[in-house]
Length: 334
Image (cartoon, rainbow, N blue to C red):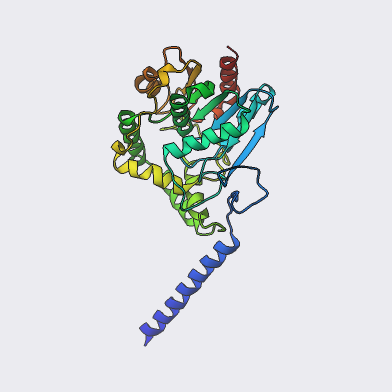
């Protein structure tokens, strides 16, 4: 009978715990920003019925710069230092489909083609028929490269920062390095991940994607030093506001199992591009200057400029905005 009494008490405690978790997730101890799908007051650009979260800065009469953030599934918050260019340019930031504060939709298609078509539609809406400048970081650098290759007559210049993979060969190399980094996680980082997962059950939900988005958002910001940053270097809290787990899981996780599924050549045709290209690469990132020189530099037109950002890592716009933006501004003025 004692065992039965203990079992009843344990069951009751478990039920109470479950109810507490459900209640806490409803009221939300932790929150992440809503998307354009749940907050109708957020600024947006509607394309084919889909509300992209957008912010723009500067005079629309000035040359247009489109900023393509990292990911897939990141947001543009960490790149907002690029607003400094708005004294001479019209700067447009947008969170890509299923990413950042753009709407979540379980039925969306996530392919490189769909992201490129989104970018092309965004350009058509905001460019007034003129050529634009692309600034792309990481995954955004991959998209910028692919866009120039496919639509070279629509682009005046591009700044491309540390794309991870541009073809199947570099996909294998890049994803091998990612796996090595995962296998070398230290105890402190593992504990951070455990804490993130523990907190995620208390995230307020509204569109059903918040818990997984919270986990990915926080994991994007943990850790100091390698593989992405210099020793002791880390990005500030709040650099990322809301990641999109669904798009990340659809596009990256399958490649972790088989990198050869990446059967694209994003540079096909790019050598015919007549505009200016700047490759801006960091000293410390595992996909920084040395990686780009060995794997990607030769794929671009011979007129491409490749500059080294010393003393910083992958997130150079966040960590060294003064120097990064000066290099970009000087390049665009040439």
